[in-house]
Image (cartoon, rainbow, N blue to C red):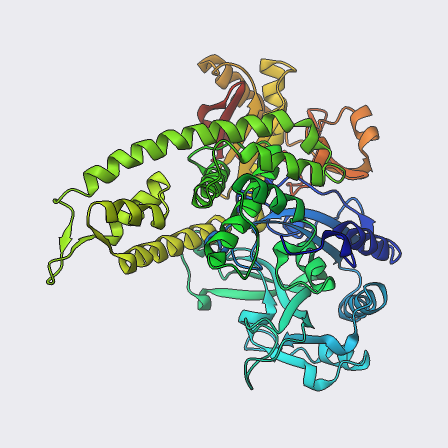
Length: 621
């Protein structure tokens, strides 16, 4: 690698410490860095932003730590997974953020952003440009933000009004909290690409480093009946929130790259040791000037990013599978292995990269070291399984490359269709280059354009699926989800009473239609047990028990008998919800005021989701 490793102006550790200490000095409370897997939220597979765990509080739930918060949050975003390999895209990243939950607003947020960037990070204010919301039919031009920037010395020529697609954040799905934002860009000094070059341009002149979102609206369907339908924009409305919020985000890796004058995020200190290991395993160098740098360097970036992400995902309890988080994890690992093959890295190797990741992050994330064996086992087992899949893929290639599937061009050339090439890629993990080599041996051409078209179609479906995944549940904060969330507490208490105290919550997933609850238990529930559990829940609903909330320390909550099985997710203070004398749990909410609001509860399904873990699904009728 061409970078001199010991010349970093600022490291990620220094940036994180400066940021957190700055906002602590502004009376913010530090909140925990929570698991990548959302605890109660079916709206996304992974935590994708620092604000994600805070949605109920942005909508008005009181946060146990108060109204001013700061955090460092690990995040995963996979919508643009195929873009990873360039100089900027990542799937796993760390996000710094500060929040005001109905406390301060634009003046303080913008002024503090400017102060931190120019005074504490020593960024030349003459190299800062900003964007603001230009306004539309739902919200006016953000004159207030413009005036604040002008008062701080940013000249009008470096303040750019932008439309909603650029300067409006949220909602995370189809509905939820949202609002205009102002974004801060660093001028890298690169020559502009033309007269229309401005912040947001992809030429590399401007690098976004911070975003202040002013969440003052809730986007929602105009009627309850429309919520479950696929709606057009005119079926939604923007309703002012009962509190105005500030939600900010600063990507650690991206900002460190800017501060060190790097145009390639993979040359920052977050990746140097990982890239070094990949160079050692491949016998190749991470350089931009070699003949094969595009393929070689891209492969190294993909391996570094994907296996860093995979290490953290496994640490948070996910294993490779064909569904939900497990499917994403499997795709990341297999994509890394495919690119490893391209640069001649011999398998097995994924665990070697994971060891470097663990060494890099073990101080900030000590649970990585505790689960090192689980990480190594998960990666190596998937690598072995993928090797078998590739072997089956070679047999499938022989079958698909038979004359029955080949297209003959007018010129007489024989072509392997793009859809077949994509099937080999998607199902068996064959990179395009491998299929081209195999096809060449048989005297076949490959329909690369057809392959690219099939890939684009798949990406669009994946993005649509991701958007749909982020379109409901607790992000809607609806009456129905509050009822079902309350029902999970009753169900949890009933399971422990009927089955025994060994029952512990392992996860939950709530939509407006049903609840899903995972718990520790080593055998299926009998019909009699299901009947007794359901009767107990409905008995407590009929008793119309009051639901109360108290804020206290975690130790005090446990002493008071509150259930709390997600230790790494809790902060200094927690919210404890009590349902009469029947249930007491540490939880973020939302809940109903009394159990009598729930209706009749019914368990509709049970199944196993792993060794010693059962799942039940329930509805309220």
